[in-house]
Image (cartoon, rainbow, N blue to C red; front, side, top):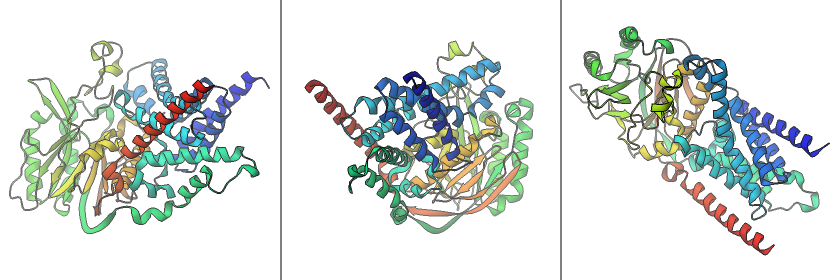
Length: 515
């Protein structure tokens, strides 16, 4: 077989291997698949003839990984973007190709630096660099990071110690080590090889549970989550503002007096906050008289400056002993979304792009950014760390806003953009990982699903059915203590990876000079 045909077959194999990763994530949860697909990639990289060919192999793996894994993004582009099919497919292809550049970079770098360090170490630290870049460039899109697939696997016990990225790097290291093992003869095997270390790290995972750093407390939070199931094409229709608000009110009213906290999802109140004062003040009083607090999403717009914020505000009781509602327009007990979604919430080069196609001029697509660090919300005495929509995918932001008083992670979203796709299931899985990392329960309220409560061990307690009007009630157990990951975050792993990369580059230069 010619080298050209061999390379083509390997590329097709890698596309299939990357695509198989999708089955590792929710709703399929075949968590063992990434280990196999990464072994395939590692074997191909070690047989590559050059860094350029290695990069091509990594790119093909990324095409399958993201082409299938984030295919749900096309639902929003196709249904709400106003583009012809060829245009929406082209935009989707551009996004997938961009994301595939990151595994291509990891593959190229690990091959370029050989043999400065053993391949499993080179591949792991190169992957760390690529994933860090993917989480920060162009505001970052760390979706489908492989560690998220492990929320139901034995490796989940590593999350309170090294976080999702640590689990990802453990998968990469183990796969690269096993690919080494497959290439060795029996005479080359040793007791203290990298393969032995990888096996030991995986085997020890269940024994790490006592090291989680948090304990379940005796305190419980009585919480009600309300899912209005408003169709996306009606979300911002002016004539639907009052029907939407009254629907949420009607769903909530029978349960007000029996819950300490009520959560409405992202932008549940579709009327701009300055125009919704009568509704909000009445809701504030209703919550007060019912001895509860209501947290709702709403858009704040300042006509004087033309600025708008995607906000969460607290209504009703700030403290259990409060004898008056505390809401007024502009009050401080609110959260403004910091991590805005490109195109959906802000448009880069908007003076140019807004003229090109309807997708660049969607309703509510020009928000101002909230501060990176903001006070926790205080609702009926409970301290809530909020994240709106895909902010929950950025653990560094969660960690920056974590305080000694934080009791619950709160995430709200509107996944109606993505229809009946795998996107909302992956979104929920990301929230589960945050619970594991930080040792705090998570409340997730959405417009049409998946609304759920998650305990501090990352297990889903209650979930509402998708695409229905629903209320979800739970007595959510709280937790105390601090995980190792919440103290140090990703810094130790990224710092170690950076030092090893610099050392490998220095050694490679010395080898090249000596040759």
